[in-house]
Length: 529
Image (cartoon, rainbow, N blue to C red; front, side):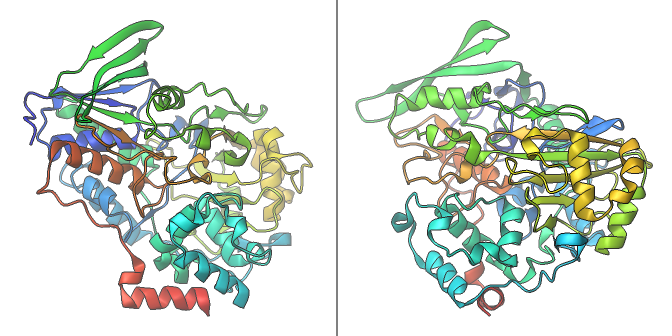
């Protein structure tokens, strides 16, 4: 057990993984807050859990849909954090109360041509699809290896309602890792019977930056944690002893072009976030197209590449950032200063804002999906301003209504495409006059789903490491699923508890639907009947 009073912890990156690790150091490791320092190159913390703007134009790059059974580590963390509006209510309690008041029950999960509502309860799986699904479930990961999803299923499977809903809920492409799909099936099998309604989804009261990151940051800073912005960690010096013990001895920093170093003693710790799925995100506007960056400007990828070149167990970042065209997609946020479009969507879907989850246009060339959140979705959002979020998986295909790829479309053109799929082109001029559309291109957004082998992601605590651990979506946590907030928080818990020897602290187990006979029966019945 470490003497927390004498130790300092340096956390590289200001995303949810680092913030969670800082919270666990405080809460469970008994670190003094002033001994914890978070280094972040961007001017805002939170990583992928973002949300910003003003009534003239709000924007979120994405929104993680939370889940009751599977998110055990996230709930454990949020049970500690008080909300900003009432210190007697935790963020976990606020989320529970909000979802009890506004439960999800999508009535328009799939929309076909001519804005017709499809019967999403008909999953469309035939006998061969079910056999292929079952085969993937029973194969061990060592046998699956780096093969793709499309290697395990016939063409019919990819045309089913089941796949349209599953892939758009979790953002899978046919060429993504079959291992990751298998993990998702096993981790979220409890969602099989409710895929068409997404009744298992749990949301935050506001966007996740306002509802999770801001309260978490306030709690950390109130306890003395220092978050320093504008700092890029460019390199790390490691030492290896004769007995195989490895330590971080020095962090190399760049502060606005000025080089600096941080020296670590034997009592100090370093937690290094590797990679970033929202690195190099670029924003457009009503009149401009977001640029697609391929140059890895973000320091998270560069740091990982630098240290991975020196150790064979630090992972292979090029597996994940080496193919932008297989990892990218684009999202967009509508800010509406008129309720006209929302009223029409309510009439079409039968859902009030905040109750309908994703609406996917199954025949869209872009495979566009949208969600209308409960208002307000941003802190301080006026009562007469409304928002809508959407994304497209196939950004290089021509739109059905504007005749150009999403990646080449302005925000105004994306709005035109959306209204076409909704069958609401008749109100386009009125809606456009009162709407701001901000598109965001993200070159690495699904990079963690890249086909991989067992050695492409490093362990949270590499062999022999006594004072350092890796954080984020590109570490290896057996059985758990990337592209979730839970993955980042669970990794942070493993890192802190493992390095500090907190053996008395039990990490919440990974939920397995098949371990509960009732849940397993319902899931298998939905998938196989």
